[in-house]
Length: 446
Ligand SMILES: [Zn+2]
Image (cartoon, rainbow, N blue to C red; front, top):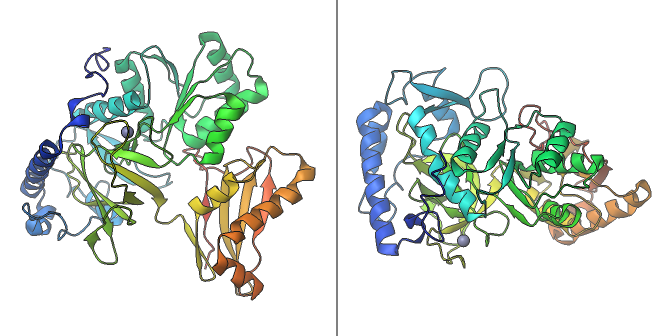
């Protein structure tokens, strides 16, 4: 069973991570061509769309229309089976997104699920997991969620001591087990894993030492990382994998990657970052939307899927020595609120919060519209005493406005309402009841 670690090559998990540029180009172009031909041969939907594929061009998929999430839904069960290359029904049905009622599904053949071992092993190895680690798996399970299942499988194959708690176990039980088994590592959706540590702190951290924190599913911001290091003594904080159930694993961090920066799994996914205004491929440091073509997805070929996240190529090699290129993930395209004439990004608010001591990184932003004017409301959890709240709130308003002249001017010209800050007790911001993810952005209902 414990074969994953034995398979690794010296420093990096596998040879692809340090392959030379000519090899990388040759292999990627061969894989892409084979995959596009496979999709066109097995799925009639792709036949016309892929006629614009140009294998000799620098960006061979540029003329192929992107596949939007809504369009893909209509090609998959329960709506239809048009995206299926094999209709024998040997697959696992997962849901994509925390919706209720009629599920948005994604299908993995059993073989495809097994093949997730490679990106998993690469990512966890690059972020310092060792077979001696004792790991809590707090990822979401049940309700057709996927991540818990393959992380569980990977931990077994990697040879770690494995604790399959999921996101449903009460924190007092986790606290007891962590103590009894000397668990040193937590893996889960960022806010679930962080809240678990905060809950354990209330029960007492004597005899508990979590030194590795692996997260996924959402960003973990600098303010959160600071809290993990300073309050809980966590030594290593990283995201071993970035991907979506609709596509595949797209990137992974190494120990040199700052928040939001990932190496591309570019032998797994053909990754494009596209400027949707011009339709052109982005140069390094230009922001665009991520399109992924997922080579291992054979049951439902995924060509040029519009992932819905924005990103930039970094354009520099990583100091770790891996040759898989770096990109910076900038969050969902919809993590932005239009306040007056300003577009306020969740990332920007997180940076402002991170500069103020006493505020945690658990933050929600909301746009409200009253009497024809917009208002930006920021809700921030803080462990600080009540008497500190007014001062901290004002400091955040100042910090947010100081970097945004458009917002500041709109407030002084009374075209928008002043920014409001509400400070809340830790654990009070609402989360998605199914996944435990923080509800970060709420737009005004027009
Ligand atoms: Zn690296």
